[in-house]
Length: 82
Length: 338
Ligand SMILES: [Zn+2]
Image (cartoon, rainbow over all chains, first blue to last red; front, side, top):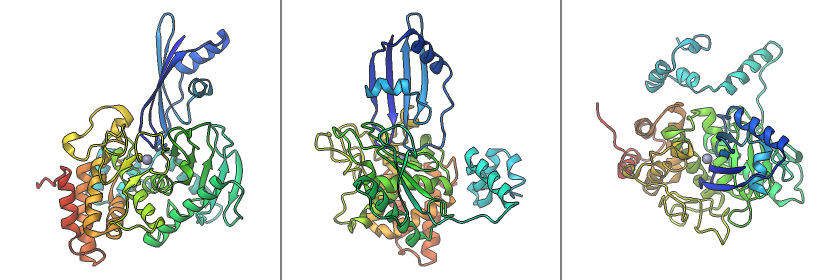
């Protein structure tokens, strides 16, 4: 499954883009899709936090979700940190 | 009409109108976030048991141990000896310097004027290129050491983040569009002022850069932002220095780190004319009368009113109002007479 992550905001204000293919188990894929479909509400009190716009390109559909420093699931953070 | 019992049922647009006319209590209610309301309710409940306690703004530095978590390991508390970790020590020293600046300049007791504990988290995440304020505490990454480094050691970064706390409690400028750009602006202004104090610089020899010590040699630029010349700090710097080049896109919460370049330049021009201390007082007093949804024109109106008032009280020089007015005019912000 392909992914794109657009990171914006932060103290530096310099945007960054990550893209690639996720190679994870069926169980993890289902968990990831669940997280994408039900993201926690963004924390309005954060200043200079990154905003993460995540897009997953599943075989049949495209799923988009937005996360912040407090709501970004570790499984998505791993895609950026390797 | 605007006591704590009644303001909650007044529509926000009416509160905003009253705030514009100078109602401090309406401004305060408009500024309250859900989080602050929750805190207030907790405090009110505690009042049944005891008096509200005022804190001392004591510092606590936590080591995130490269996890993406806050308050992982307490590394140093107020009055404790320095540790072997220089990042912990720098975060301790710089946050203490910022706290003392606001105390001595404005008699502010910590960021909330009620002695809020100053909590810093250092070594956050792995190669994390950022620093942020989350409404309660500060969090700093070490940087990837390819482009960025040492966020917790940079006095302007620490002052910038702590100023977000001050703004939250004084005006709670909404973090989007022009109010968000003003939120960023106030953090850059006091980041700059505190940096010049910390380094014993003056307006002549200051570099007016924000984040010059967090960029590496390999980074394509000298800093993150420039107050003197917005848009020139690095190859990615798109900050405008005039309303003609105002960013109207949706990125970065509608350009909060971008359009802040416009008032930033006005601040620089004012500081060159009347000095940084008069500017510090004018900007701080202006923040106290702004409200959650204030925009650039509201800022201009209130900063001119504030300058006049401080001049009449002999607290700033008698050219302050003219200098501020001309500085904002230079960046394309002029007061519309009604
Ligand atoms: Zn900021």
